[in-house]
Image: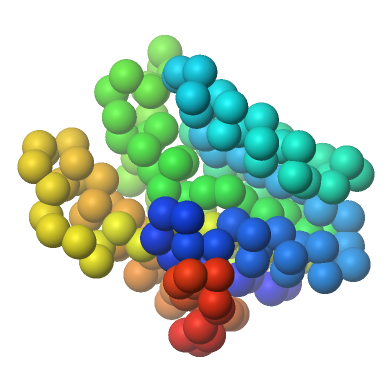
Length: 174
């Protein structure tokens, strides 16, 4: 089992770096996309991302139940690429993004953190570093920033490798 966390800001090159790592693994890759498309511009972004990925990569769209998806798809000789954790977090705490049955965010976070170290194969997770700016206005925005920071810290602690990407350049943190 190998878990790698890739952190960076918007348009930092973190996704491209993670995709290069997945390709270099030489393993079959499953790309786990956590976003939901709510407008045309974002739909175009998602389409560009899909077009850039190798055709042989399998794609799963999982906006809410990430731990269950990882458990179901992790296997020896398999690489899972999660893009991205902050979009997953947003889907789980934003009232407008929740599934009809709702989501227990603390439980989903706990399931991920408890199960991740025991999963087979290679897992690459991409997350935004959102704590380098000002404290945002609005309760949900502050909640998002806090939860993202705490999630990144917890994942960094249990990951085998942590890389921060800025201007397309990877900096190994762990």
